[in-house]
Image 1 (cartoon, rainbow, N blue to C red):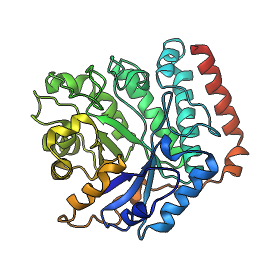
Image 2 (cartoon, rainbow, N blue to C red):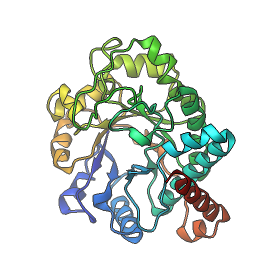
Image 3 (tube, one colour):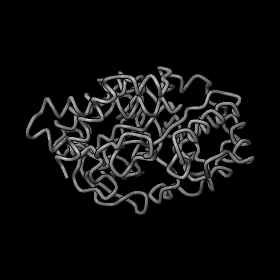
Length: 336
């Protein structure tokens, strides 16, 4: 099962063809796909109308520097600001993180998408890719925020996705560009980086996104295509029964598996349910790569589809919407 990226503001003829492939079950949108709220809503409607089966429409709308849709949307502060507030007022920080989640999810649902890949529950310990995307360095504090954020997303009607399992925050390298190796033993990871994931699973998050990080003391391959991490630790030991996403197979750290087909086979064979193919240049090869695999179950992603139909007019009339926006602006000003 693939979730693919497209090139621009409208579907091309080739991309309409991709949507006919039985392995394509979703589309992920980026800044390159956004010009306005109205345009991206029309694009979502066109994707759904052009596909013969339900499509999971996704985006990374975390806040801070990872916010793909901006004009016409609330300016969402980076998660790090909540960690700073936590030191002064724990309850206020957790309540505000819940509002951030509800607001983010509500705007994305009103646009016509199903899912924002959130929250980041990696520890804030200096990773170049994570940076201020993390709530805090302390696993207990991140676990508290994870529970609050999952609750806020679920209140809006959106499924939460915990990322990047089993923890991307404690190594320096950015896996978009480099291999990343975390030498720590499993016991240390369980005591630290896995704590927020356990909290999110207990809170009912139905999806997890894997990291491309290698943990050689635990398994020889990166976690994203490691049966040890997915089938044994995540599913058997931690009791996760939801959907497992790969991270983008176009990232440099994924190339250790080989070419496009080798990457896809490695992730699916290890236990990933869905492979992200974010670069349109890789989609055609990816479709050929899965032609020899059985078609995925049609209902596999149904737990991640939007749980509510929300119109922008209804959202804008909700007093919680204005209140959440105002509270988040105050947080941003306090952290400036």
